[in-house]
Image 1 (cartoon, rainbow, N blue to C red):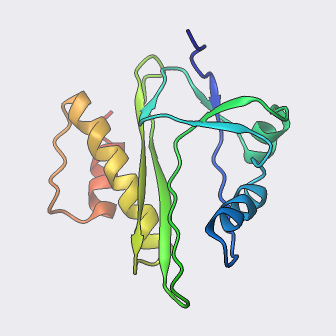
Image 2 (image 1 turned 90 degrees about the vertical axis):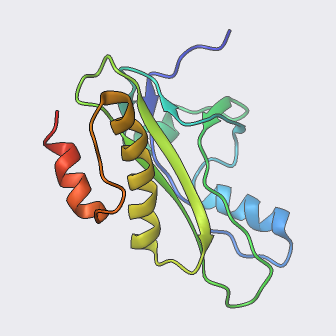
Length: 151
């Protein structure tokens, strides 16, 4: 059985190259996680998991470590194509309750729109487990305000 993570950090990377595998490697280098054996996991943030800075998180890693991650990833071979990938994090007020991490990726959104959408996904998943009613038709910034003040 693998241990339950107790800390997490957020990072990001961009890689550009004519070969997609090399572009991915460059993105991992840009994110400072190229020396890890990444294992993709789904969207549950364990109870009590502490959010630390990228610097602290990367410093705790050793080359070859098996490192669990939720990754938003996208690639294109179309020159000038606007792509985006974002992670959303929803942490409950009660540290003994689990939270959610969401990934979102696609074409044509600005970075802020993509980030807002990823946050909205994570907050909506968490809200549904806490019994908080967040109307999906209401703009994210208003829903975020409702969510933050409901617990």
